Amino acid sequence: MGITSITDGECITTVTVDYPPVNAIPSSGWFELAEKILAAGRDPRTHVVILRAEGRGFNAGVDIKEMQATEGYDALIAANRGCAAAFGAVYDCAVPVVAAVGGFCVGGGVGLVGNSDVIVASEDAVFGLPEVDRGALGAATHLARLVPQHMMRTLFYTAQTITAQQLLHFGSVYRVVPREKLDDAAREIAATIAAKDTRIIRCAKEAINGIDPVDVKTSYRLEQGYTFELNLAGVSDEHRDEFARSGSTHGKG
Image (cartoon, rainbow, N blue to C red; front, side, top):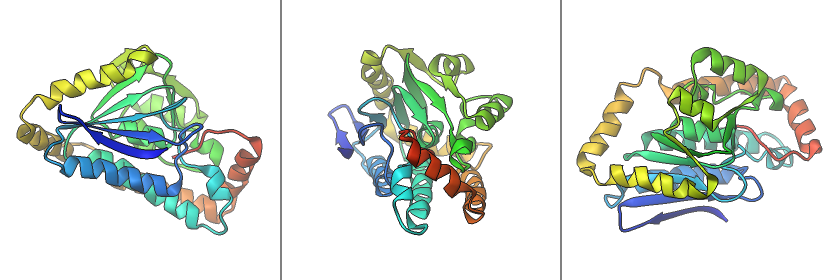
């Protein structure tokens, strides 16, 4: 349970998230995930990173119940900083990151996937941001990397999800496969990239980030600033308390 990282003989490092029951990651887990991804990129043996998860879904965001059970705002601040660190790590990782998404990918999951280089998804995968229903904002920056502008706004305002097949249509998901073939599909594209000269691929990753039209880290931190305003106004606590009482399992980013 937690975050694991394994490097194989094909120059592929697989980072796995495993926080039952739904991979709602606690504050400390986001920082650990960030370090595992960055460490993999620093390792010259690693040419590609696969980011995957065990269990029912890829990611359910932050652990809101942990946040509401903690006195004061320390857990909230840690979760926000942790998400920023993890999302940034995927983006800054020195090698390409392939996200293997099975089941639900909501809140923080969209932040991770939106900053990845290649996305492979299962047929049952859905993506979305429930932030406005949780008294928060954030990860619209990353959703905007997956869907066109007006679709992003619609999904963000309504907290609706979008399917892997729809993202395949938009071109942001590379392949959609049955759930049982997800890991194989991710390894297939990872192996193709890993076979290239890693010196060139590492330069390519840096160059592509350099010409990116959006500064994803600054953009996301701007979104988080509005979340803090909602917290100071007491609005966020109202919605998080309601969520915690509901027994729901999906968090936010």
